[in-house]
Image 1 (tube, rainbow, N blue to C red):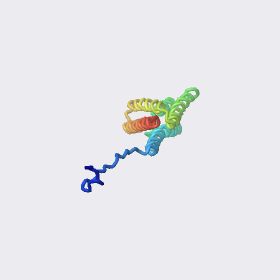
Image 2 (cartoon, rainbow, N blue to C red):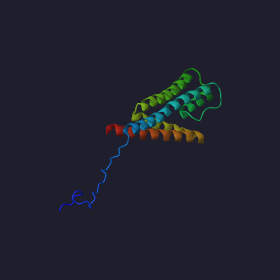
Image 3 (cartoon, rainbow, N blue to C red):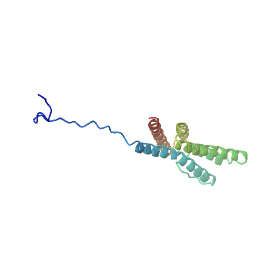
Length: 168
């Protein structure tokens, strides 16, 4: 005697649903990673722009500036103002500031194009800039640098996820 549902009406067919494979929406995940990468890379642009503003504020003779921006450029500006540098020394101060600011702008550009090394170099430079803050012990500037470093680390993590997804 057969033990099929057709042969035996009391025997019920046990039907289990096939396992459903759930895969994340790759395009959505990649878009989220790209947004995180761009958001993190944009911090390099903000630092460059605010450092320019801080330098102009200092050159105008004002005694205030934003806590945001590079401490390196603030130190160069403060030394130039304190010692009233002129001539070649003033040009050197401007060149040092311009190099620092351009470096961060270029790092922002390259980081937005998913260059991991740009994030890492930017992270190292931000840590070094934060170490300069310890000389003056400006707690707000130090907190800002800690937040900036955190944002760059988030960008590095997002870029790693993006690169991993692209290689699969």
